[in-house]
Length: 78
Image (cartoon, rainbow, N blue to C red; front, side, top):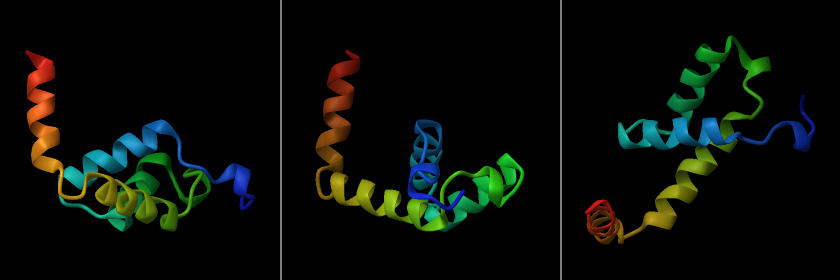
């Protein structure tokens, strides 16, 4: 359970964290929510620090380009 290969975040978890970030919830609250949904710490498959780091990395990727990303998203939908 604690080996590095066993504690990576799945794509579903990353989607959950990104949606939680849109609701202004941080990595810690996202981890706690996922822990409750999965039935305990042993079923999460990642540590809280992984959730927090993903939120940090996502925010640094978006940076100051959030307005431009929104416009590009609207253009793609049309």
